[in-house]
Length: 348
Ligand SMILES: [Zn+2]
Image (cartoon, rainbow, N blue to C red; front, top):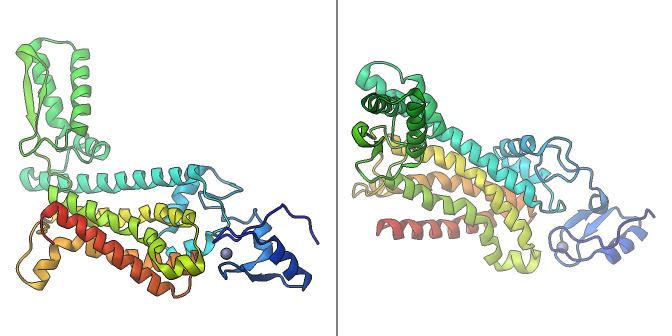
């Protein structure tokens, strides 16, 4: 028999399997079931730490740098069944890997928002002025997609102020940089966004008129819909059968919830589309379809969450009746999201 480290544990429930494995191997078996939760395990896999997927951000033997693996893991999220059958419960949770993954999601979300902002602004420029968006505005849109200000307006106003103050180029550059920095974050200046530039004789102001990337109702609907994918894996904890029989350790649900952040990207893209095309997200027409339209973002998140959690329950947690578990989790999480939505809009 080969030497092995003390205490081999069941990856799903954490039960110590040393005695079980010794007994099983003495009978010449290479695999067996956890005596506590019934998970089928190939014993060799418990000792094998070098076989984690090379692309996975939490791999124990990383052969690539963590930033690259974070984006590769994110790309794998497009194929949930492939992802969750390769990510094993025996890989220990690595906070560093999960933080890297979250950063990758944030970068991807920023890229989606930037593309949407430039596309929407360009469409507006073409409609109003018959030309394409100036490069400086496109660049500013890419850096600060949430801002409702146009960089060219700010720069123009800065130059006007500087001329009035007879200030030098350094002063203009300082004003421009400061104002752009303010504009990048001044998203929520109510209905009449306006930023002041300069001081004294050179005082001027720019009104924000670039389209808001996400209208207020779209933002709130997106926020409510976000609850769905993140909460759904955690609901497994509430299911008596999965917790009593399968005894899933909470750490696995935390991992599943963390990677569910990937679902926020298509949901964000959908919310941006709904916002840009002015869907009635506050209150719809008094028909069945009309009643459903305000919940469009949540409805778009539903099938994604269902399929994603089916993959988690079946391939990762390896639970019995994975489809039923996924359906139950998605239903409970949908109710939570609807409750959040109702709290923000005072109506369902
Ligand atoms: Zn077990």
